[in-house]
Length: 214
Image (cartoon, one colour):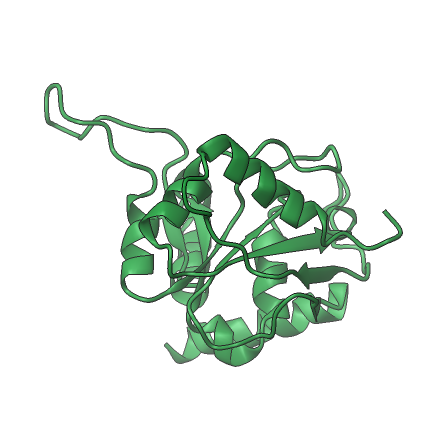
């Protein structure tokens, strides 16, 4: 536990040293309440940057989502994501229940539902995969289903800026670049709002946090 805590402090320091990891709370304050933070996704560093931008007292209760196949590939990755960041592992594709002929497909959202049910906050990327095109791709349905199941949990949009330039393609050493995370006003699922409309509105809420230079 001590080693994991020490590593967390070190990683937050390094992230801030390299990127600045500035958190701009434009639409809400960094309150110690349960939330779902959702953001654009351009780099493996995205959730580290959001985590480092949060005040320390919020980090302990805010869990990133990590793809199980990638982040458990080595012992160090698994230790880092489980012991240091307390990540919620998710499957990127549905799979049949092991050893059960004709068994139901696993629900990728189940670990997220369990975490929210225990009172944790989450950091999620509704695009599902990293996108290097600048603007976010269409959001997948997971955010909508979580909003349906947990209507009392505020959904906070965030825009991560410049992180894709910290680790240019082909480089192994991070490049010091000032990065920011801008947190907007929380949104909720409106009564009677359909999935398509909600996901488009959520994506617009993320885009609205972009710096004016964009």
